Image (cartoon, rainbow, N blue to C red):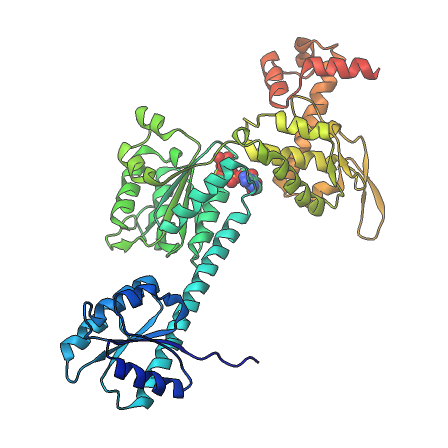
Length: 493
Ligand SMILES: Nc1ncnc2c1ncn2[C@@H]1O[C@H](COP(=O)(O)OP(=O)(O)OP(=O)(O)O)[C@@H](O)[C@H]1O
Ligand SMILES: [Mg+2]
């Protein structure tokens, strides 16, 4: 272990005799002392960063000790200052303490033992305070990094966005998140919540598709008997979230009749449960999200202007993916890593042609979600040894992916059972697996009918027992392009 370095003390007094005596007394106690007899120029030349403490006399020519102390502490707030006063000079002592002195002693210092104890104690607690502040800063930075880590992308647009996100998150105020579908608004809300560093939960409520009674009771809770089904008191999310976050998703879909109550709660930070009169305090931060243009909603009288003004001072606009194309390759590899481990695949690289196509596409329909689904479907279709993701696997730019004809499924005992679908689908939740299969099936079905009908959409729709308009709408939604099929079909045959 290294020896503790001596305490570095700056001793400021215009009286040369006292300065000399007290310096040698302190030195004898093992302190590293620098004497200074000039409270103006001498102090100005000193770098307070080199000292742990300053011992300052009050009565000096041109400048009081209190002024010297506040000067030194403005340059180094953690510097411990001890004042020296004449006998019984209580008001002087107060002015030293007001200027930031930790304590004061009357001159001459009689009780050297107490002086040293006070000095070391104050230096120790100043160090603990500084270390705590550093720790708090480090923790805060760590929370920011953790909070932001789920938001993949370091394009200039995303860097600027994350910077603003952190500032808004630290403000503790309600935030409105606006962005197209699939841009990551929910991830943004979680990032804000994580950065706030609260242990309380983030509770999401989707405003879309709930009727008015349900919304009111979800948000504010209800008292027993407040409506037919209200058998017991129930707390709403604004109450149960405590000091956490309430995420109001699809705020643009909140019926206009329910908006006034929400506005009141946000403004007063209090509300009452449905059917109740107790005042409940709102401690939680509210993060609202929408993919609608709320100004337009206000103009069309579907959204209250006062609620918009209440929400919009801190608005985060999530940039659409087409405005940050630099993020596409990062996101592609992020999703490849994710699905390599979820589906036990081994994709290591993306064929340049495939990456170019991914970067060219504008992802207008569903932004990052659309990119994620494209990569997910492509990887479901890859076999487990494929190392390169090839363009033929991707369903973008209106091209259909290559669908595997037949794959086998293994039981836990290693038996191989014939199965029409890739085993990797079993790693997906039902909804995503079904979506992926339905999409593959739809692409196969529509393409096959078109081929059977010799590329005549009206006849293909007939074969499918569908209206022509529905058939072509489905072709459009599954990205089926007649010319592509003709081309592929004719080339292949
Ligand atoms: N920057 C990103 N990094 C990683 N994943 C992302 C990013 N942005 C979005 N995603 C992923 O894309 C999907 C859609 O994101 P999310 O649900 O947050 O979008 P949204 O803006 O809320 O969409 P919607 O308006 O449809 O509700 C999620 O799977 C999410 O994890
Ligand atoms: Mg969402």
